[in-house]
Length: 64
Image (cartoon, rainbow, N blue to C red; front, top):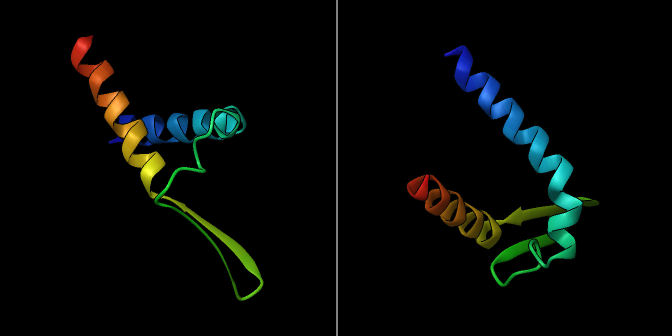
């Protein structure tokens, strides 16, 4: 169980580090990524980006 917490924590750290790079590459601006303002806050839900990155990660996992 502790391994999963460590893996999730590391994944979140890497995502936060690489998010500016991914935004420069166009991720986060794909059709299907939702960005809206509600109650004075800006909300961002990257549906398409999440699906695409998950697909790439599963391809890498199958190759290795």
